[in-house]
Image 1 (cartoon, rainbow, N blue to C red):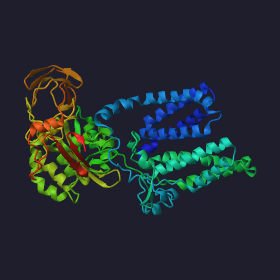
Image 2 (cartoon, rainbow, N blue to C red):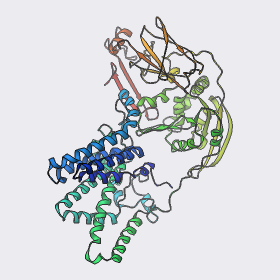
Image 3 (cartoon, rainbow, N blue to C red):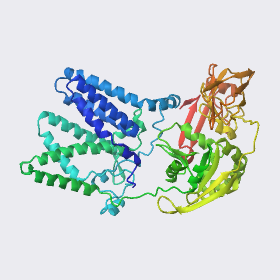
Image 4 (cartoon, helix red, strand yellow):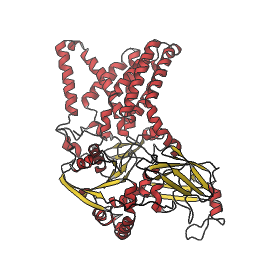
Length: 620
């Protein structure tokens, strides 16, 4: 069954956390506060491991609850209430923090090196904001009204429509009425749930309130929250709907309880009848039938790959790299289907879906020889790219024939699959003309939507053996060797510079070991580690010779970390040494001032979707 995005299946711990946070706020003793705080922290940790985005939502929920608790919910007075609660709050923080440690250990190194990359552009916030019209109309999955709802004037296929249901709204209004007309404690509690409903509804609407697919001039708080560290990682405003529905459910339950407490409905039969009728109306409004189905059968050629021994990689064409902000490569659901197929064949593959990553992680593939050309060809059917790629095709084929054997071997790619029905004609032609492949088999059958599909399986011809390889890091043909910490382009006519004290190179070294020789542009002092293990080296002038012992270079791609021990040279000093009279600005006849280094980089949507202006190494 396909009812929406898979992450909604990871929201099960939210009500438990909200319950024990509420109980923590009402704890009268230290023991009760500790017990409730520990349990709340445990459920927050469970939610982080089930779906980290929702855990960040719960932090906002906690802040909102804390403000309400301090402002209106404390009885007895503040000092006496804080004493036991402080223990529970500390327990909550310790347990939840311990649960988050593995995430932080994985994230912090990249954050320390790359800065805050959670908010890389606007992401998909404009697409996946809830539309206010959708709150009042059944979804396209409704068996009676679905066809009409599918024609609504706004996207409503991926969470943009949050239908609340009139039965739930009526009961919630009764709940608000009875709560606000009750004793003081009940009024305060009701006020919290009302405020929570309003706040998270507004957050779900995205940067701007939208009605019927048309943005209004009324901004929402999502634009502010999306600028906060960590919270900026959420680029899907409509996902806040889980907390909208939680608040609505509590208010509706309060309204139903009030209704069942009426004198005429106190009898068991009458209570059962009213409760059943309310449940029937709610289910009827939210009914999704028949369930939409997705075909999850994996083509048998992937079982053939699974049966082949060895650690190797698979290149699927077209493919893509996707995160919460953009798609690199082919923007097609095929890139997610390929990940499902990987659960059968179990081999490493290029492409995939991640949540957030530094810009350099995607740019590595864009700027890598051969892979960058394949990314362009994956989009060769786009109107603005087609004439350019047609004119460049002979050049692309010549470059592919020259570089493909070495690159495919470097990446450990043994097989290539071509999804013929999803690939532009020029990509299919390129696979046959430029890549060193032999077709092994072809599968034809229905894809996951039932449409006819064809997949071709190719085996890569082994690259000619070589005892030595020579690279110039200033050459574009060597970009696949560059990990983090290198200048985006080599100096005109000069070397490629390290922009960090500890840059890294990616190498394909033999298991039996050998020697790596690095030639520096100027004398330098450094230490080296291969796959996190220090390696010995000898220095002769600007030549650094590293001895790699057998059994150390065992990774599919080996990572050589270089740690420079000399004081770094400022960018202005490097620029002055390269061009004492100032660097010329293209063919304009003008020059930069001496000691000014200017780098301007930009890329279109298909190959980066960014723009940077750096003056002496700093973003302008």
